[in-house]
Image (tube, rainbow, N blue to C red):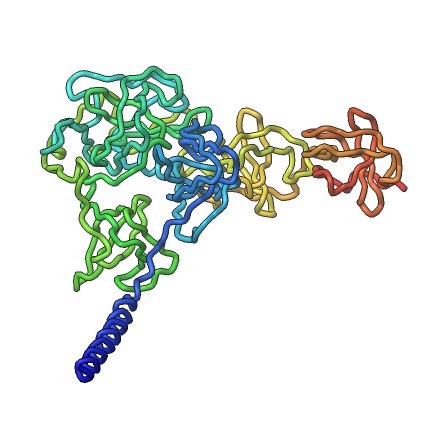
Length: 509
């Protein structure tokens, strides 16, 4: 019995040791590869409006409550508005009312106007008179649904699709539904309503772009059964069309684009999962592919980081059907003399071409002044997105002279985006203007005193916002005297924002 007990104890000890070692092996998982995690914005206000475009001029898509976490998809060029994913679709939020979480270095910048310009340049149809709501409306016509191109039906997709020969872009709906309108303006009559396809297969030919008086971008699309009409650009995303080439889609989480096969990535972007590009070349060993992105940039990526795109309507296209099909546009096309090629621009009356030197206002409001400096009087105030032809530049390279119905004015290019060739702009030296009276901007209520010091009697409180004249200052510039609705009074200089030529303020005391 003692021997059996010893044997039993030995077996029990052995089973415990094996169990311990077994647990030790199982508890050592292999090292995992670090994955790229999409950054998020956390709503830091009681309520936050998510809009269909990057600005308060766009319609509200959904109102989010505080604490909501929003995966980030892209950013506007101002680095303030960010494109996020919401429970009802893609939308834009003002990041100043959120808390960032994660690494934002790889978040792409979305320049809707640049893509729209490229889209209209690649299109084969010119839409006359469609800028700013002017001109005759584009209406549905008979035949092939009134769209630009040929109407085709692809295999398993029962709904016919309009395809335009030479098209480069197609648009995919990102909201539940949208009205296709006769004019690029809110309130224009509707040709019909299109709905988002949950299978992500349906898209529409992009045939033009425009911008309305509220600086909202619009896309002209061809819809079978409806015709050619306009929808708000922020409600869709662009995808490349199979008509213009073999479309590859990135399947890696993140891949660095390089300037040569396997070379450096200097000044080349990182591509994230889902990014598209046309296949334009391959390395001799087949390990690298050259892609052309939507904006025309070309670079190389590993072949195993991308795959041939499938699943969209035009991925199944028979190019011979499109190339030989007659084009029924329902709108006017323009042909370049002697070439037989169709023009590639959307006509916008009074608009600027991409070659014309001009600036685009990149702030909600920008003052145009009589001279190149803030000390000069304001001639006009321009809203964000306004395009202004440039006819001169100051010697400091900062202030630009623009022209328009207001006459001429100087704008600070730090608050605008320059377009065109700077070499074509003459330098204007010794420019002069009308000096403006120094003023104080009151952004929060301030108390004014009878003399420069808090120990003197308080006259009252000036409410905000307000802009008042500055009539005097102390020698150390600590206090300034204002001419307010309560009379003359003194306020601490750091409590207001001074504008104009402060050297014109007389010193007292």
